[in-house]
Image (tube, rainbow over all chains, first blue to last red; front, side, top):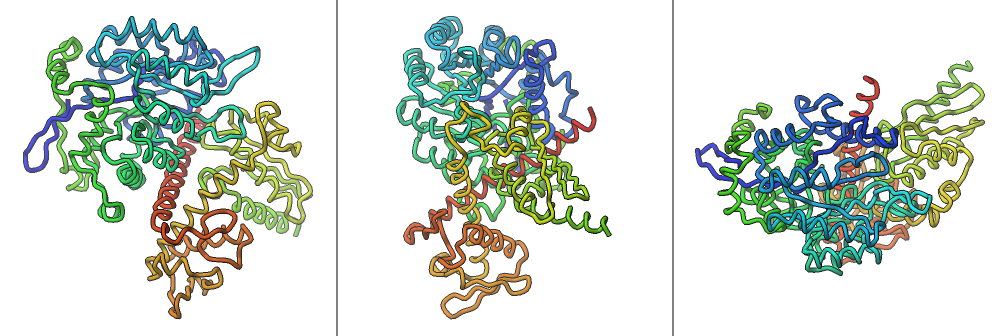
Length: 374
Length: 252
């Protein structure tokens, strides 16, 4: 829980839900294909370094595998996040046990079911076996009404197939639609779509979100979160989301621009608010890529520049920030915020880590012209 | 003397490379820091080492960029051989072999590609055109040329005058002199000239040279604004990533 304190002394509670959270394992003993496994985690590390305040960049070994305890401490105690939703990325072609696999996630969620939210994944190339597994996971992990409601759909996952290598899949294929039908039957109504740099055939645009558009139109009762707001195709994303009201902007990666690229962040937010409005933008720090502690502080202190307010006719008020930080995600996942707030005052994790509401003073640092404190 | 000529050749190679853009970012590869090393021998043998911001950049866009880099250098007078080498990319070996053997993308990737990169190239270039059109229109607006007036202008109504541009619209001459605005106009015009459309309307909306719809020009410009925001976000992210990457690789 965040308590935002404005210069006039007023305080307000802010419920924070992060839709895109990870506990990954990229330690060397988990590397199946070392070049690719190393290339993957190094690329993540560069993302972190590129956009973080320097004091939040860890040493490489900690980054490769930080484990459950550190993650809980950073996100819930230091960060002030109330709930974090897992988005598994298995990458079985790169890592022996996967980069962040569903079994491990199931273990964490079972321990902390009011804080951590189970999301699974599927791959249409897995066929009936994949569907049976999904059914089993729903039985096992639907331990709260909001659990097992989402799947991460990483379309650029490499996979060994018929003796060759397949570089990805499309969300508008018949096989993927079969899985979406299965999701509907199982009540998994949030599809978190994530584009990657390769997809077959390679002459096509791997980042094209046309397939999400087709799926969202065909399954209007389901919600589709496009992670990192469709970058590098923000323009396509906004255009498609303007037409399909069941498409949401997932702010993983995009959020991190707020600290050392504020003008770029402002232009991005102006466009999202202009095209989608404030109700379909979902917060994420994308931990452990970035630490929620500074991201939330910077975001709450961020002000839309006057020229953009005028040009786009939008603003990033405290009301809008509250929607983005938690209210929108709560609606998508069916989380009752008031009920959850009560529960989290004294849940097992709060007791273990002595979690207290985190107070963030708004406006002061910016006014004094000082950099934001840690 | 030979040394001076060689230095001059290197300068020309760099200038040629500065006309190559990363298609997804619409910025020159030289500004992005992608040209890691360049050597020119006295016999005119050129070797260009390129690096991208991540290990995972899409092979298709990388291929486009490398092909263009190879061709602009090969077309310079005095060049006997060009070797282009991509470093630190997940498919570097394959791409390097393909590029230096003069293969097309589909020859290089065989069964993994359905065709060549023409459709992809057109898609991304159309975005670049629209992004640059928006920036040009914004610069024009600041100099007193309204969007409606802009739609009526021909390419010949705008001319360079020293470090400024003069625009003639409805009998009035407007001067664009702010350096950033001059740059915006210049980037749009160079795109038009690259399409070989020096004679038609100034504002065009697609690669065929069609004008934007008059009634909808306002919403067309908001799409152009979005395309511009997308390019500049991607380019900034790539610069930041490349800088983090170079820092990591030089310290390990």
